Image: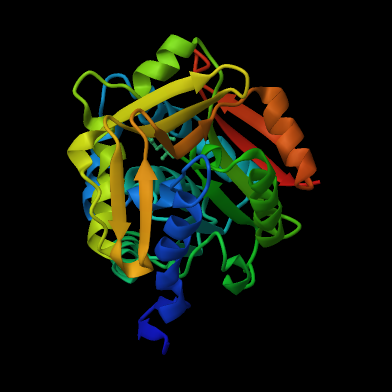
Length: 328
Ligand code: AVJ
């Protein structure tokens, strides 16, 4: 728990032994429901993160490159309008996107501190070192913590704060907890801080569905990988070959649903939970929702969280949005 001091770099850890229970809890909870479910956060072990990186490069997955181009086009404007002196990064963001924002703040002459937050200590140390070296005079306060639960452990702002939450990850939250999470983000912004929220936009369902059913099957591997995670971490015996990837756009709720479908009846034992679970033939288990947004939905969610939309940046084809918001 001791802070590690390396010049201007300081890293604090807030994770304890209890935090390892989340997978076990989620699996027990999710597999004993009538509609089985595993939360998407467990898709990202080392292999899952690699597969996700590969997804970001897929021709069908327009989100990553579109968001990057929006950020590149508007980063200077964002830095000027927010006057941000510090950047709080929730979850291991991509170094490219972080750099676009840090560069703009450095060019504006305001950049003073970078605050990376991640559950992985090695990730926090790596990005802390990387960016401390690259940006002269910038201090780093790294936090090893789960940003869904430990936001109150962030340091006090040292001035106007910019909090990017990019990639469309907010879409993984079901509507109620999405608004709750946004409200907790509002609390860390402070009176003069800004949230920079990346969201995928509602569009032709075929374009959206193609992004989650790529022709090379990388997304299918990414989805199926969660079964390997549960097998390895909890001593389960999922027959991964007896499940198939399903992803469809729910046109009413306007979200993507990713599921795993059992191709044959199967009984799965989860050793660590002393649990046995039956899957019927063709039974589906939900592994992710990924909500798509309209400007109205964004305004509504932000308002429900006590925030207001300052500016919505989008691309010429209106595929993706990066929104600047502040506490109302
Ligand atoms: C990282 C949550 C934004 O929902 O598009 C990609 C994850 N899932 N392909 C998304 C994902 C399937 C991604 N997010």
